[in-house]
Amino acid sequence: MSTILVEHKPLTISRLANLGATLICQAFESYQQQFTTITQRARVRFEQQDWAGAQADAAERLELYNRVVNTAVAQIRELLGERVEQKLVWASLKAVYSGLIAGRGDWELAETFYNSLTRRIFATVGVDPDIEFVDTDFDVPPTQVEPVCTVYERADTIATQLRRILQDYAFAVPYADLEQDIALASALIEKHLSKIGALRVARLIEMVRPVFYRGKAAYLVGRLHSGTHAIPLVLALLNTPAGVVVDAVLLTEDEVSILFSFAHSYFHVDVKRPYDLILFLRTIMPRKRIAELYISLGYNKHGKTTLYRDMLQHMATSREQFEIAQGEKGMVMTVFTMPDYDLVFKVIKDRFAYPKHTTRQEVRQKYRLVFRLDRAGRLIDAQEFEHLKFRRDRFSAELLAELQAVAAQTITLMDADVIIKHAYVERRVTPLNIYICEAGEEAAKAAIIEYGNAIKDLAATNIFPGDLWLKNFGVTRHGRVVFYDYDELTWLTDCRFRKLPVARHDEDELAATPWFNVEEQDVFPQEFERFLGFQGVLRQVFMAHHADLLDVEFWRTYQQRHRQGEIVHFFPYSAERRLRR
Image (cartoon, rainbow, N blue to C red):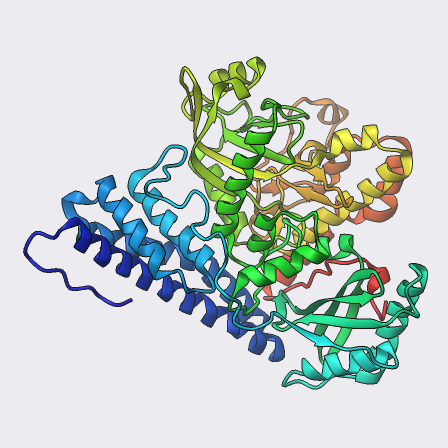
C-alpha cells in the first residue's frame, strides 16, 4: 500500500478529503490485487490436485479483508488526527472518493470498502447517508469493458457445441476421455430438452468466461437458449488420476441454486467486473438474492451491504412486525423474524440456561470458525451485524418482552426505535423437528435420511455438531437438511468416541447419572438413538441408512482420515446428475 506524505502545516478540509480519499482508494486497490492473486491460484491448485493449497488459499482470502481494513483505519486515523470523527471532513471525503471510483468496474465493492472504514471509526447506529454509501452513488453502472460470456452459436448437434466449449476451457491436465464425456453429457441434455419440448428448436449456448472453482471441483456455468426456453447449463469437472472428467450436468434452476447455496463455501472465480456476472447469474437463478450471489463469489462484505439494503427495502414495503421465530427456544440465542421475510435475526442471550457452560465470546468464536470452514453445504452462512436500528412499532409486544427479559445487554429500547448492538442474520429454514411433524410421510422419511447425511458430511469436514437434537437442524426449500446451532460445535478430532461400558449391576442401568467416569470430550455414539426420539417408520428409515452413526468405529475412522490429512470432496448435486454413477 502506498504511503501518503502529509504536510506539517494545518490542512484544509478540502486537502484532507483529497488525501483521505486517495489513501482509501489505494487501500482498496491493494485489497483487490491481493484478492485477485489468491483467486487466480485456484486454476493451478485444480490442475495440480493441490487440495491442501486450495484450502489454505480459501482461508487466506477470507482473512484478507479485515487485515487490509484494519491497516487502512490506522492510516486514516493518523492522517486525520483530531479531526478523524468530524463528519464535515468525511462528507467531503466521501464526495471525492465517489469521483475517484467512478470509472472502476468494481465500484460497488469500492463503496462497501469505504463503508467498512467509516463504521469502524464511527460505530454508526443505523445508517448515516452523509458519511457512508447507504445506496450506490451511481444510477447507471460504468460502461462494460468486455462481455462476461462467450456465445456458442447453433451447431448440427449439442455434442458439437459441447466439444467446442470443453476444448475452449482446456486445462494443463488433459481430459481423461473427452469424447465419452461429450456423448454422456449431450445425451443427458437432449433428454432434458425433449422432456420440455425444446429438443428440435434452434439453440445457442452462453458460457461465463471465467471458471468457478470450489473444493476439488471446477464448474463451467452458462445457459442454453432453445426457442423461448432459457435453461441453466452447468458442467461440473473433476481432476481425477486419469485426467479431467465431466462429472455432472446441471440443467434446472433448483440444481444450480443448491450449487450456489448459502450453506456452501465461496467460489474462487476471477472476474474483472462482478456486477455483470451477478446480472447473468440472476437470469438462471431469479429467486436467489443478489446478496447471496455476491457472497457466493467471495464478496461477502458487499453481500452483507446488499443484504442490509434488502432489509431496508423490505421494511419500507411490508407492514408485518418482527416476532419470535417458530421452534423451541434456544438456550443461547433468542431468534426472531418477520412472517413475510425469509431471514432470521439471532441475538446472544445475556445468560445461558443450564447445562450450557459456554460464554458469549466462545459463541462468537464458533461463528467465526464456521465462517472459515468448508461448510460442505450443511452449515448456514451467518452475516454478523452491529448497531442495527429498527422502528419500535415493528416489533410485536411479545418479542419486545422477550428481548428485554433475555437480551437486555444487547438490545436498547428507545421511545421510537430498537437498537440491536450485535446480531447474526441467516436464511430462515424450517426446524427439522417441526418439519417431520408437519410434512407427509415420504417427505419426513427423506428428511430423516438427509439428517443423517448432514451429520456425515460434517464429520467429513472434521466437525462434530455436539448437539444432535433435531431442533438444531433445519430444512431448506430444496429439502436439504442444514445445521445452524453452533455453540456446541467442535473439531471431530478433539472428541474421544467411546463405547458404553458394560454395567456391573442392574442398579447401574437404572442410575440417574453415569456410574462410570465421563470427561468433557467423551462422546458415546450408542446413546444417539435414545435422545433422537425417532419412532416407528422414521426409526426404521434412520437405522436402515444411518445405523453406522451409532457405531464408535465410524467416528474413529473419520478421525484417522483427518489426522492423515485427507480432504473429502462434497458433491453439491444428486447422484442422478452424475454421468458415471
